[in-house]
Amino acid sequence: MAKDHQVDIEFNVSNAGPVIDKDIYGQFAEHLGRGIYEGVWVGEDSDIPNTRGFRNDVLNALKEIKVPLVRWPGGCFADEYHWREGIGPRNERPVKVNTHWGGVEEPNTFGTHEFFEFVELLGADAYVNGNLGSGSVREMAEWVEYMTGEKGSTLANERRANGREEPFEIAYFGIGNEAWGCGGHMRPEYYSDLYKQYATFLKTPHGKKPKFVASGGHSEDTTWTDVLSANIEQNIDGISYHYYTLPSGDWDAKGRAINFTEDEWLATMNRTYKIDGYIRDNVAVLEKNDPDGDVKLYVDEWGTWYDPEPERDPGFLYQQNTLRDAVVAAVNFNIFHKYAERVTMTNIAQMVNVLQAMILTDKEKMVLTPTYHTYGMYKVFQDATSIPFEIETGNYGSGDKSVPAVTASVARGTDGKLYLALVNLDPKNGASIDLDVDGAKLTKAVGHILTANELDARNTFAAPEQLQPAAFEASLKDFDIPAKSVVVVELK
Ligand code: AHR
Image: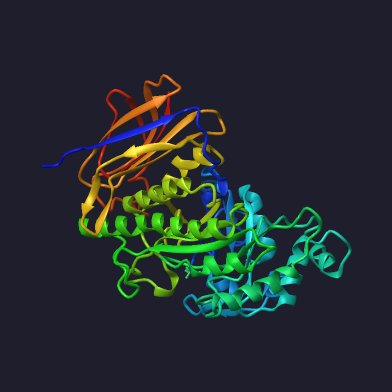
């Protein structure tokens, strides 16, 4: 017989934990499938309404969820990207083959200037990922000078001649990507030496230095975090870390994006929740090697990764997105908030049309996914001050597939309001929430809920508004949330 979980949450509103950096809500846009071309860039002559080539519907939707940061151009693509091919008159740029993703033609029409124009239109910051794998120190150093140069150097003047007088602002600069794999199959010791060499020559005007990102490990591995944080003493602000949620954990048969069973739902929750332990272990390594907390852990790729849809190009990594993805996103946000001291930036993979996307497009059509709505509901946590809390909850699942039924976040928003996020991972049983709050007299919870009857409820081009946040209000005396739901409320 289905039974609600009893969840007890206790906190004092006067206690303050670390600030939840807005960059935890960053996005990733790679030259992959229809992630950039069609997804973001359609060109000025397109029939799809656009602003200087960027599609208006996508721009407006992304502005709505306050995207703080975008990582570009990859991913694996970054280590094959040669920046000079993406500047100058668009019709004169070389056409390459995207050997990583689908073997399609890469026209280079979306290059450095287009990327910065895009993030500036969004009001977001730029995370540029440099090419260590197949580039050179000189190529990377010259790209940084081209983007940031203030003086009359030939490179800065070339940028001006290409239409941009003012230097571009780079918030983060990545030195290679997945150096253990597509970025060059290196050992962490070898990469550490290369990193130091590259980082030494990336020069920017005073006060304009981006945060430098070393390319770290993935999944349960802590070796990369350990070797890099032990060997790189300067010119480093963070080490990247990647974790993808595959329902099966098997890269050859990952699992379905839709029409899945409850067992697959549980397997997905179980695998996504593993990131809690993986981050804990990587943070422990950083505490050992960097007790002052200067080097952050940047989870710059994360999200669900399913089998490609049968009728689509497997190299394009296009997948549908359901209520399950919304719950996965919320579970991950609550985990990132827990480690907000060290985890100050993440990028979900990826923004449009690729993997766990915010937005899916089909030519002129666009749908907002359940994941998009979770980002929208959680935007109140950007730069909020976390409030430490204790939570007691039963589990969902059993044996080696068991996760907390409910996870949460509590924080004081930049608007001064008190916010609570709850996610119920259990698809069958609701949860009864008992709040024990010191320091304030609270009576009700007012905000939004995302839930549905079907496990794989989703928005499609034919029915784009099936799953949307609904208004939610509850008395704290009688505070219940349904099965498989994401709830973000202000506590009053
Ligand atoms: O996000 C897709 C790919 O996954 C990225 O290019 C790569 O870094 C990772 O393996």
